[in-house]
Amino acid sequence: MTPKKIREIFLRFRKANPYPTTELVYHSHFELLIAVILSAQATDKSVNKATIVLFKKANTPEKLLKLGEDRLRDSIKNIGLYRAKAKNVIATCRLLIEKFHSRVPDNREELESLPGVGRKTANVILNTCFKQPTIAVDTHIFRVANRIGLSNGKTPLAVEKQLEKVIPDEFKLYAHHWLILHGRYVCVARKPHCPECIIRDLCEYKFKTKPTEEA
Image 1 (cartoon, rainbow, N blue to C red):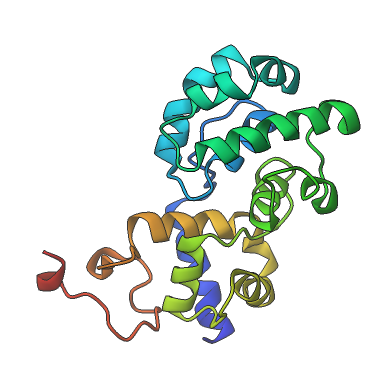
Image 2 (cartoon, helix red, strand yellow):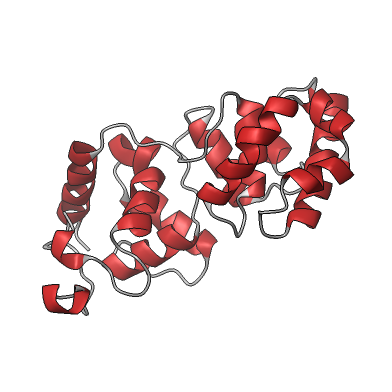
């Protein structure tokens, strides 16, 4: 895909939604960190349903640690892999208190030292909390980037590196939000909604859905 096409894609995304952000509900860096840990292989909707109740009880590392793993498990049972996530969240709270003065770190190395935090989660936190131009490649971005022609990576890391290279700097802060939302609501996995897509004429996907197929 040519640089001109890529720039036009992100110009259209920006015009349609100038300041996109995560759909996870949070009110602090710590709340977002916990929500992102819980969101692995789960929907934002299921996470928000749990955290709206959970964060009223415990919204700091100290309060969550005091809540304990058993009660945390009960609070997040509607979320996939809730047992492992509860264990990771409690361990993360303990480490935040002991090593980081209860503050969420603002660099990748320290973030990735927290249980349950991998590269994707770290990228979300760095981008959304600390306004760093990172690109967190989830299943939506992996699919969309490869489908429309922005990348041809075989792994999330390969796609991330390709996107960092081809996306103009002026769009990088919001790029992963635009791509996630596009994948979640338009360029969906089974039958993409090509007729209503704002970048249909720029997309290089060979099997675009026609209006009759979409219906």
